[in-house]
Image (cartoon, rainbow, N blue to C red; front, top):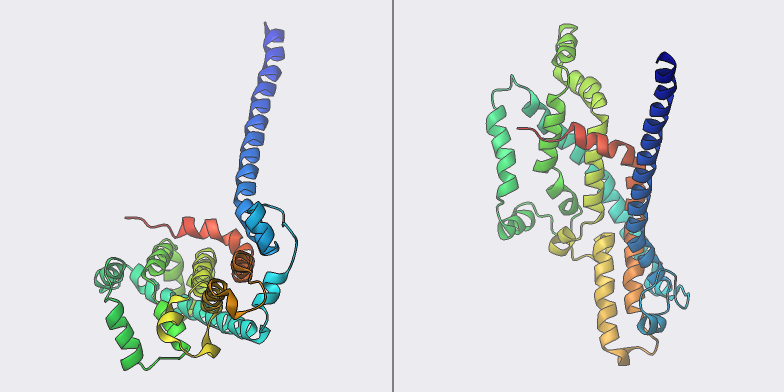
Length: 303
């Protein structure tokens, strides 16, 4: 009997091991399939941007360019200084806005995470209340243009997004999960609140800060609404708003073909603009993706 049990155990172990390998293989195949499915829209956008406009009308959208041409990019980049200037404005707004936004949201979230802070409940309710209600678009416009005087000012593209309630609540929850004993030990050693915040709290919160930083980058990079409201000077156009202006001009010219003697790439130009817009943001996401899931998990909201 002992010999038979000894011979049966390895076989059962092999069966369990084969099941585990098969399960892992199936999971990896499913994830690879999902990943490839997510890449299809991006490949389609790139393909259409490199396709001939007439061939698109005849054959439709395909994963491979039909009538390969770079005419859409050449048409958009007819005035490259304008695109380069818009890139510069967007990069400046995104960089400064992300850094200042992280500082402002962190400075607001840290006292809200302190249980010994007397105004913690009132300020937390005030921050949460802004998620449900706002002052309205008209008072906001009057405040920025009349009282602050930020019409055609780059500050109007940065300041409105600095204190975002959702990001503050995520950071507050993350800060509240830090070990209290570590902060108390720093206070016993003579460290002040500013030193504790910048040398202990922030270094321990890198994953959630990277995640919130990615949110800020995507928000500032993709924003066009603030420029629509407050910017009339073309030298201050961010990239997204400039591309919208160019698309409106292309649509107008395509509906009035007598104004120009050359064909106008409507569909391919729209996709070329999308490629120009999402490229840098995609690069930023690839750099910060290792912190993304961990930061969301650490900063997830609790009751």
